[in-house]
Image (cartoon, rainbow, N blue to C red; front, side, top):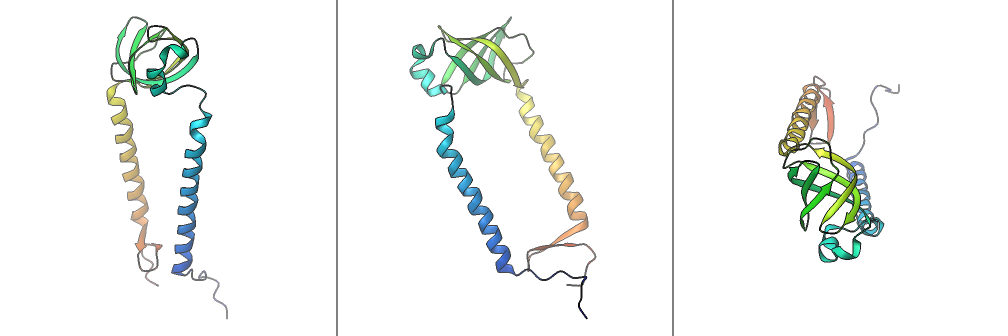
Length: 166
């Protein structure tokens, strides 16, 4: 008689090979991303802008930065090597320490005429809040999972709690 209730055993070396293939694939994707990423950006980075600012005046630019201060409809941001960039035309709400993404035209005197500004983090507390809430969620989900399941380290499996047949 054939027992159809239990699946065939998966050997430890089979699991090790599958895990190794996943890790090698992840490493390959990381190397591939690094190899193609730098050449695909249509905008200069902050190091290039700091060294050759006048060359890029009049070009479209996308820049992420931390708000230093705000005066009326102008923001002053810090982004990488650029210490004080003025962004004109911002009408949203953001506090010093908040993070914004700016899309606009680079002008003289370290100014960007913004066509679009997106607030990534409205204040310095938003970054901490996002990760704190995510951490609480992870702990909650792991608690629910391990309430019903346990780990068997001898054969690298998860077992339902209460299953004492193996």
